Image (cartoon, rainbow, N blue to C red; front, side):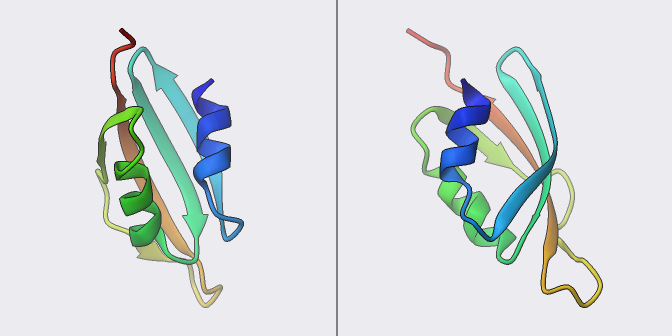
Length: 78
């Protein structure tokens, strides 16, 4: 499942606060210490056709965390 794949890809320093999937599209919201690096890592995942950020990464107060929003397009299964 995609949620399992994402769980394995996310570093310990990041977590998902919202996950929605409709067909081949996934929308993630979460927090992590380095959201840009996380987005890059997900972009390199072969199962994902495209990873985009519909909203800018933002710092969460003085927690050392960043909030991220990512849209993921899955590759069609053969």
